[in-house]
Length: 88
Image 1 (cartoon, rainbow, N blue to C red):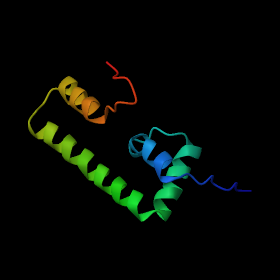
Image 2 (image 1 turned 45 degrees about the vertical axis):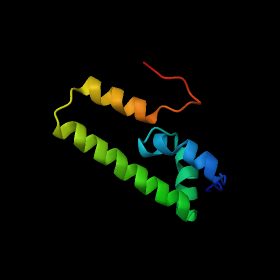
Image 3 (image 1 turned 90 degrees about the vertical axis):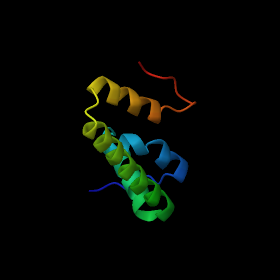
């Protein structure tokens, strides 16, 4: 028997978007975000943009031959928000 997926709002979906895109969510949370994106065109557009942006950054850092530690630091700075402390 399959349980119903808890519906989440846009704010919660976007809070978990990067972890979702990186495949870092547990199965339940991943399904919640996926279900929201399937039903919410504005959030799906944000998801598609962020996916393209992350792919672009990854390609640029590889193309320029940036060392792995530099690439990770740049990505960490781009993903850093005022609400969470910077991880070093």
